[in-house]
Image 1 (cartoon, one colour):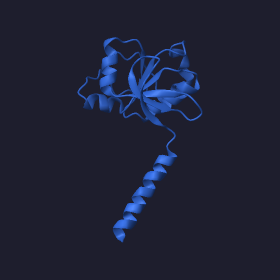
Image 2 (cartoon, rainbow, N blue to C red):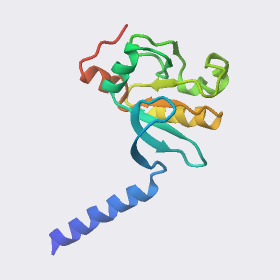
Image 3 (tube, rainbow, N blue to C red):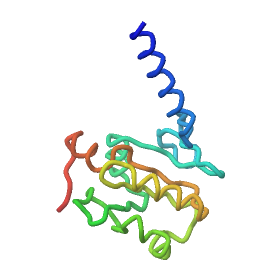
Image 4 (cartoon, rainbow, N blue to C red):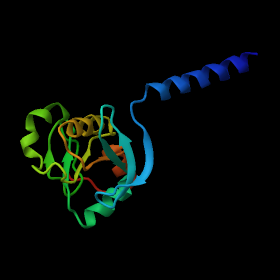
Length: 149
């Protein structure tokens, strides 16, 4: 009987966590850039794309995007980083981002939490081609890729 209650409680918690999520992940190809990523629908409209370290590494081979570190303070940069803008300063420093709202922008932080916040800010500002490094620099380093000091 205790096992059934525990299982029911775990199942209920799982459903509650799913219900509270404001993101809907769907594997797809980003038609704007041709890159593989997971579409993340943003509440209120818009979407960004979650990518993994190997996808970002491939993208860096033919870099055609603005790469932003939103750590505060920076704990190391992925090679090719164009700017370090702490997440709490993004709204005030939008002039440092590309003017074109369809410009490809890749953002990252330590684990992915602050870059998700930044992605939502950029989507709210009208940007349409935003990528988030899922797992941040920790996932990047765990995959064996180098960081610049």
